[in-house]
Length: 484
Image (tube, rainbow, N blue to C red):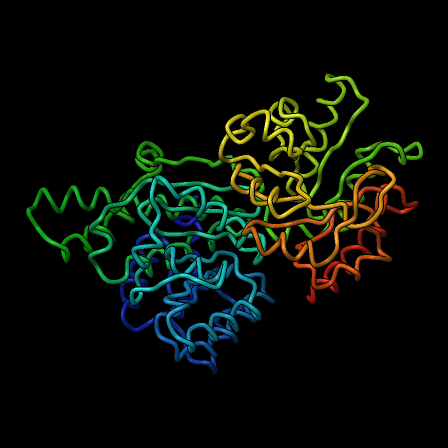
């Protein structure tokens, strides 16, 4: 990665703020690339179409129109674009500017502090000027949660997400890394974040086909260089201005061997999470209607069509066959970024690599399922009253399956719940709620106003001649029912 930047000497256009423009240009040069700081709206498109990397920095807002023009030109030319959404949640001007950029430009990398990325991911996040708020900072206790957040934003935007903090988080749609390099003195000079964003532009420009790896390398180089710069500064008994000089120096001096030796990189193995969004079409497998096709093929058709959650439910298979089948579906679900749980079999869920397990009320009475599966696995629990729903949440449930909402042949004795009862359950808990029982494309709209987050179905998908098409119809109906 470093060698590619130094050998190719990519030209990087940086539309950045006047506070750190000189530092950004110098860091690009130190990496071995060549900066151009063109930012006039009349010329940015022409420049962006011939450079190898484009950096946009929202530190000052008068250049947003130029960023839009340059970003579109870079997209058309296939040039990697890096965004630094400085203080994006701080003011209406910045919120609107950030929204406009994300709607009109496809970014290769989005790098920000925790508060900035949190705002882009969930619409909230405090701010302390251009710095992250204290309550948003990454710690050893919460860094995995930031990993989940970064991954979801990566999936939403198609960009690699880099969160700067005491622990840096880097995420694509499929992979998440934590980096533990850097030094506290980096936060005591103006522009260390802006410089990192500029450095990302150089690395993406030199490695346009390996954006994730380029991002990891650039963030690591910045952190390691900060550590070495601090060592040199302390040896001189000097302060922050000397540190800044050493930092830029070290970007140009650090070699691949030193970088590899000092990088402290962890790849996070994060499962999927149960979210309200993932409840929309919760598909439960049933091999009774396969019609000669394999469960793998039918399930892949359903996932490709937009099912948002997958549960494997088997009552007849022996343990060995069940395990192999569950392992296969676990990989399928991972391919489509869909949460996957096993119904009522904790051992299989743990052995197959599922994201979690779904159990009934009796299971949480007889055993502590949450303790058995651990804190990071999904736990779904069935409920049919406010009391059992609250108990499920108190037992560690991540979501609740509530029903039956309509008559079903699989549970003939189950009494149907009214919309009023559903709404009472939904109001009593804070976790997602999915409706279960007898649901199909013809009766979904009857659940409007019930408070549920989605529907769980078996025959409405797996009994159909074309399960994929049935899934698309259900998803459209659910979104209509939810008012989306």
